[in-house]
Length: 229
Image (cartoon, helix red, strand yellow):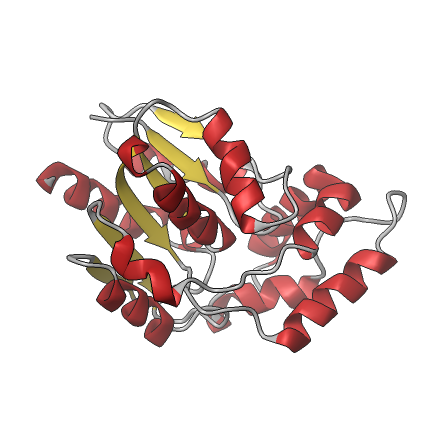
């Protein structure tokens, strides 16, 4: 089985995947991508490609889904499959871009302690709004990455790629959380519908942070799909 290259989302480090690893196929080597370089999605994709295996299945979470698709366009021969988790092909809303940039400008190295708890709660299923342990895990990832990465990633605009999805030729799986408050089920379905032959899976009772909220369900879906290829 080709290696799995795990591409994280906004202000997430490789510990995002810790709970998922036991549920992935033992025969699939795992490699981690980092999104701490690049001022655009394409620049991030090129930086990830520089350290990627010769061929791999890309697993892109949230913003990492945009990066994974950019890699599939830049180097299709190197991408044997795409697994897109809690992501979208829609462009950023201008007001959200403005909010991120404003927050990044206010962030200082000394005072930055990760994403705000309000922002983290919005990324979780509504039933986890008071899950302090989960909130702390997400906050700690951002704190470890630091203010510099926060500023870099906040300036990256997701322009959207709906118009090029039909050009993706590799096998693709799209997975969405039924309770995702950031990337809707409709966004996941339209992504799968636009990529030729793509499969779609829905995880009930989970929000945006699927690798943390539902690692067993996510791993089972991924493993089953990989085994059929």
